[in-house]
Image 1 (tube, rainbow, N blue to C red):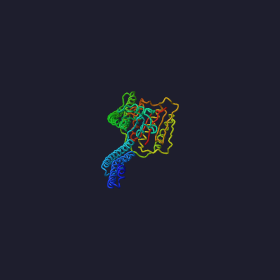
Image 2 (image 1 turned 180 degrees about the vertical axis):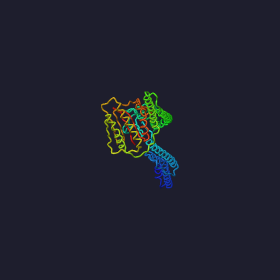
Image 3 (image 1 turned 45 degrees about the vertical axis):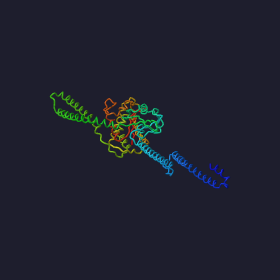
Image 4 (image 1 turned 120 degrees about the vertical axis):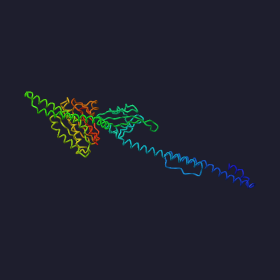
Length: 423
């Protein structure tokens, strides 16, 4: 347009100089107007392009400066508000993510997170301790692919329904499968709660009152009966031939009374178990002392003892008296199992210490323990022996729970092993 106007008026510039001058002025005005018009439309596009670059690089820190241009200024204000909101939401999500990550790791409950293909994506430390498997063997694997009864039960769990799984050592786990939305897709997780300690406390509260009442009544009765029996021993029968039978009968009755008192004292021992007074002790020295005590009994039964502890010391925080009592029960049960076993050729008792996993194993060559017995062994007053009272393993369980040590009693391919995972 400007070129056409100048082209028309240029030939008549000498004839009509004012017309040519006017054409030049109009041309300058048009050029200035076109430049301003181009700048008016180009500036918002430039700012919009800068905003898109910032969003592309996820830069939520930078802000656009205010502009005198009304359209650009409105665009700048809206963009800055959007970016500020996005930044707050991003910071909030990061904080929630960090909090959730630390919460999962620090949780005393086991947590297993599954991906979209039902493979294990994350397993927290509490769950690793419960399943007793390393992390590298679990991540990326499906639940059903793990050759473990516990994982097989987890793989068949219904969603949003609590299932109780009973494992060896009397350990009870309450498990529940649920889901949450992650990046727009449902993702499942399994929550595992170890209820062994709480259940043991509830059981102890329930039977302690009954045992105290029974012990009080039995002891009072036994004491009175024994007093009368001692008095009756002073009487001399006129029939001398009946005197010996008379004294023998009183001895039998008094012996049965004493057996009943001992029986109740064993039950009361479970209730009166003191709290653990923790101190630094050398578990290896404690075990060596017990081995020295039981060595004559082992020799008389023909049991070969293998004491395989390579470490110089096994330092733990524990109660010496309680641990001594616990290991005495374990050794006693192991020797009885070996003695009652039908296989008499190879009688062996092994004490094995793994310093890497801090696991102490006491294996005996006695009869194998069935899966049904494994689940009931640490139940109070349950015993697989015909004359057993079910007190020894209950004491062991309570002592181990007081030390917060994990434990397991099961049968491998041969014999039976009592495993203790020390902290």
